[in-house]
Image (cartoon, rainbow, N blue to C red; front, top):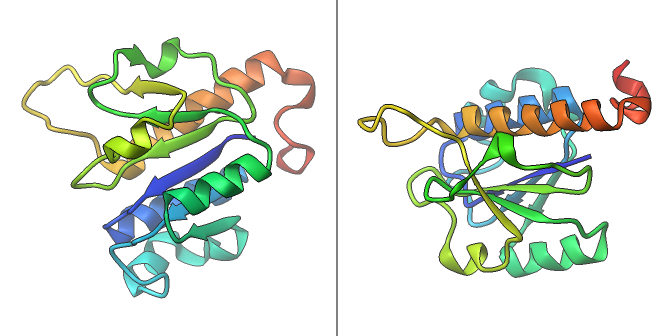
Length: 164
């Protein structure tokens, strides 16, 4: 199953909404510190409602610590979602071991992190006056496309039995 990685998230309700999406889809969520809030933040809890016990949540003290976890677990590709990327997310072939990497709300993905990623995808926006999509919306769009593709190509073993 893919995993979601948030680098230095700053807005508690966004992270709470992403956690809820991850809980609903049984997707691991990795948070890369520093965070712009405490994990006990009431806004974070409120956005995730009572779904936090169902989130497979991991916190890493930095990108290097995360990379150690990534390499020692299942490996897989690091897929960066970046507005300047040329490949549209729907043109990319997702794999079950992909890690979907998203940057912080104000700053995006740091250049040093981008250099460690295997692919760069974008979610198109046709209105040039709109600077960006909400982070939680972007994660939901990307994650659901990955699962749509995985279901289409691995229908025999997807979704996991607990999701049937």
